[in-house]
Structure formats: C-alpha cells, structure tokens
Length: 452
Image (cartoon, rainbow, N blue to C red):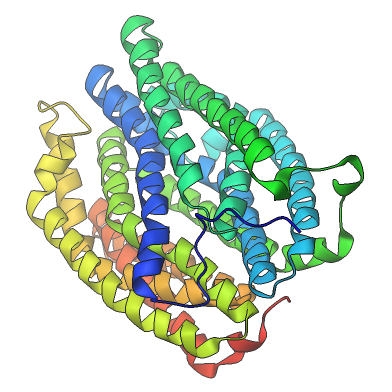
C-alpha cells in the first residue's frame, strides 16, 4: 500500500492548535493569493481604466461566485470524505474517491460553462446592471466563465491534497499562478489596452497554468493520483457518500451566491458610485474574514480525521482552541478596517475618486465591529462539515444568506436607510448562522454523521 508523503500532517495525535495553524498557514497564504487574483483585477482597472470599469468587474462577482460555488462546494464535500477515509485507515478507497470526483467535476464545469455563455445577456439584465457599464460587465463575465473548468480542476486537486494532509503544494502553484496573473493584468491593460477584457483573460490563463502544474505534480509525486487503466473508475457507492456531503456544500455555496446576486441587484440600483464603493468594501470584507475562513477549511479536515478515528473529545478540544484564536484575529482586523478605512479604499480607486472612497469607508465602518461573529460562525460550521453533518452546516449557512438578503432590503428600503442600510445586513446574517450552528452542535447529533 502506498504511503502518504512524510511532510503531510496527521491530526490524530500531538498538539492541536499549533498543528492546525501549521496546516492552515499555506491555506491562508493561498487564500490571500486567491483573493489577490480579484484584488489585482480591481486595483488595476480602478486605477488605470476607470471607476466604471471597477464597477463592471465588481458587479460580476456574485454571479461568478454562484457558478464557482457549485464546484468548490462539491470538492469540499469530497475532501471531507477523503479525510474520514484516511482517519479510518481505509486508504484503498482513496483512488476510487478521487476518480469519481474528477468525473463529476469535469462534467459539472462543462455544463456551467455552456449555461453561463448562453445566458450571459439575461443574467446582466437580471442583476440590474446599469447601461453605462453593461457591455464591459458582460464581456468580463463571458471570458471569466470560459475559465470555469480550470477553477474546478484546481479546486479538485487542492481539496484532495489537503485531505491527504498536504496544504503546501497547492499554495506553491497558486502563488505562481497569482504572479502570472499580475503580469498578465499589467500586460493586457497597460500594453494592449484591453480594459476589463484584459484582466479577465489574464485570470483565465493564469488559472490554466496552475492546473497544468497540479497535473504534472500529482502524476509524478502522489501515488493516489497514479492510476492504472482499471483503477480509474466511477464508484457508485462512494459517489453516494460524496454526494451526501458534496451536494449540500454545493447547494449552500450556489444558493449563497444566488442570494448575493439578489443583493447585487439592489446595490446596482444605487448607481455606479455605490457599485464601485461596494466592490472595494466587499474585497476588504473578504480580507477581514480570510484568516478564519482558511482556519475553518483546515479545521474541517482536522475534524474529519478525528471523527473518522472516533476521537470526539479531541474534536471538542480543537474547537475551543480555534474559537479563542478566531476571536483574537477578528478583533485585530476590526481595528484595522475601522481606523484605516479611507486608506484601504485608496488601493482600489484613484485618489481623485473622493465620493467612492468616502462611501466605501463609511460602509465598512458599519460592519467592521462585528467581524468576530463571522469568525465564530466559521469555526462551528467547520465542525459540523468535518463531522459529515453536511445538511445542518448547509442550513446554518442558509440562515446567513436569508437573513442577510432580507435585512438588506429591510434596512435599505423599509427603514429608508438607502445604500448604507445594506451594511447592517452583514452582521445580522453572521449572527443568525452562528446561532443555528451552535444549537446543532450542542445537541450532539453531529457525532453520528460520519460516512465511514
């Protein structure tokens, strides 16, 4: 039986928080670089094209995330299955799990690509894109959709490598891809003057290169990806378990994306200045939450291995420690955003865009004090997800979506607060999701949801 690379981390024994943070550090750096993809797009078009171009890139994000969420959610579910198989020492099932997931991911990506290209015009009208940025928005979205297969494959490789305990290799390829994306952005925008189309093509090309690097690496270095002809199978029994965890994760991500599309329609009704301000502010929200989202990804693997090994006390001890860590990190991020909002906004737009800077900074200042709710939410939901309690992890995230979506319209329209009212909806969603996840956690039902 092939052995896992010795650099991989075993979560079944030894110190807890230090191991989790060591494992999550590459995920965190990778998440920074992945966010960097979109940040660079926004910074370059905001500073070297126009604020309208920034609005065009930003308004596609919720729709693009709707598509990407379907694929990343499924790969997340599959990685939990792999982690539980590893914890239960059922390594002979890892190859069938990998090949089965790959079949599904490729087919799903192809379908979404066709749907996105065919319905792009309808989608732009659906989210109420203003006329002055319509063509740029549609162009960026159509090119972005062409890269869905690359996004699906990268997330597939990254998810399984992390499930096997290797969070470093996906990071290396992502860093290379991110640097290529920066070079491509500058070349297509500053040299070829392609505007938003240029940054879209730069992203697609860079992601394609990251996938090529992943394929070369796993074929040479990881035994579980080295298939003989008869080993590359579609295992129906494993597929049912993968679907059990993957479909709720995929539905959660896609429906969450759908909710943000609905909110984006409300944001777009306030004009291109608010769209540009929201685009920049939402990037800062991602950065504020990126540390705990990275920890939650790694913690779900930790939970999966220990649930597979039936070591529930170690799961609980791990949760206590990451909750404390998350609280400290979120308070630091709150202080940075609250006190340096205008300076952060100036990264995305020219200094002359005073209105965009002021609106975005004021918007961030409203939700920044409650970022800690999101940190706690990520930790508890990761516990449910890693244990295999995918339905309730999905339900808890639905609470975030539904409450955020409803309260955005309530604050903005019913209470007459306008665009700024949307900011108050964020912490409302975080609190609702956290409450739901905590109730489920304290029932203890998640302890019986392992798939192995």
